Structure formats: structure tokens, C-alpha cells
View 1: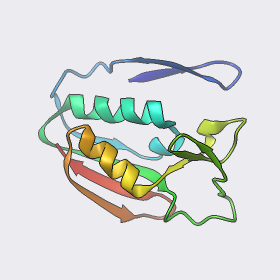
View 2: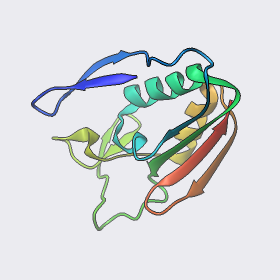
View 3: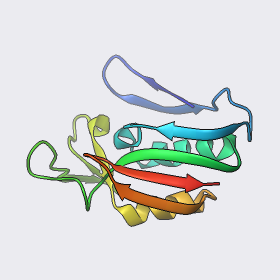
Length: 130
């Protein structure tokens, strides 16, 4: 899936399906991608991951979990945009955090099962089985 960015740091909300065929992959991983996605894009990427994974395929992702990320230093996540906590209103995709329960619910709504969440260094890790 592709998102296009302008010269002015604004994301165009247009996504194209990835070149991967439906149910063609065993494993999808996203390191520090979901920490830059607002809610609409987060949903689209999860749906696309589900679409391209075979049955029993695994999705591995990292994201900022608002309950676990250390705030007050580099990260404050003081602003909200829907379910997203954002670091900057000027550049909302610069750093984005979500509640753990929201992300787990979203993953399950996409069709994944056996969701496991574990704190990682800085970001939380999530593994889901299709």
C-alpha cells in the first residue's frame, strides 16, 4: 500500500493496494510504521496486511502505546485527533500513539486472532495470527 506525500509535509489520503496478491504472504512486519499513522491510515494498513496474508499468516508490528510509552521527555502526546494521541498538531504523523485496547480491538475487527502485545524498547510490539 502506498501513501503519497506532498512537498509541504501533508499526506494525501489516497492509498493504492499493494502489489502483493491476496493471501500470498506468510509474514508481514512493520517496524515503526504504525507510530506514524493516523487512524484512517492505521485501519487501511491493517486491512491490507490481513488481505495479503495467508491463513495462519503472522502480522508483526510496533506502535506507541499511550499507556506504556514514557512521556514527559521526548514524547508528550498531548494532542488528540480522534483515537490518536499526537505529538505535533503541525506535523501530526511525526509521532502517533494509541490505547492498547483500541489497537487490539481494531486488529480483531480486521479478522486477526490470537493477538499478543508486549512492551518493547520505546514502542510496544504486537503479533497477530490470521
